[in-house]
Image 1 (tube, each protein chain N blue to C red):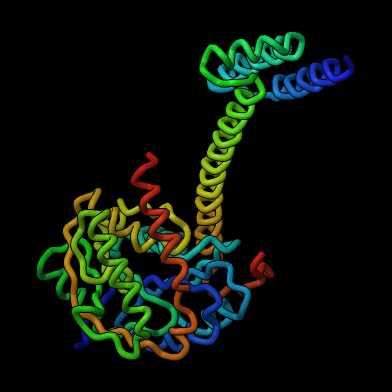
Image 2 (cartoon, rainbow over the protein chains, first blue to last red):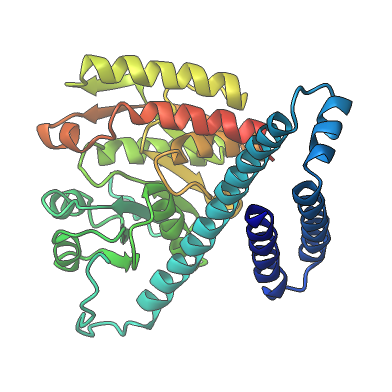
Length: 122
Length: 229
């Protein structure tokens, strides 16, 4: 079936992109292990669709597709939260950086020097 | 009163306050030699107006929010080791310098680290009714979440002693900073007091005030901070 080929190809491509992204911290290593686990699970689920349904029955869900949807919702919600937290952190860093610039700029300006910086707003 | 307040820095965060900032600065008597205006990336002529005065001007390269402006001003003021008290002051001219003098006298006499101005102990002239209701709700909410008991939590007029200012470290860039300051008082166990002040709501300051709907954001953020971290 063509769909199996397509799904496996896209899964492997996505995983490859994530794995080749550089990063050396421990959380990154942890993420990579998880990712490989995900790829293996995805390929099994694609090649043996019934395995998902068996797993679903095991945890008390009617169909494998339902289980997949539940998992998807969880992952998306987690991802959103993650992005939100990351965004807050970035914002904080920007504030610290901009504050530093603002104070240094004022300290560097010689008394009586003309304000020659055309830096309105953004 | 002709005291020289050389150990006091007045910090004024300003964002698009071109039409009021100059009058606000000029209303501060020369007995307060240290006036620091933090321009928060204004798009109007705020910077030019400030440069016409004696105030120090610190310019945020981008708009960061009022809380960030206050913290920048505090950081800049603390660089001068002779500064003992930092006064936070709104740019729109709603505060009176007499109140600042009262608050400073109170802080000196009672050795209090943070003195907050309270319009509900004092007077609020021409305050819109809706604003009163929301502010009262904010006070009630803040007293519950922070464990600090105040009658007016969202007053821009504060006197902060150096020992507290050094540990304040405001991180919330937007208008949540008023709640954040109160929370920090609770966390750091700063000694605090309230002094009655008068706030004059002009047409201008009413138009500049933070929008009421923002109260929802602030409340939600405060709850969220309790849950996360």
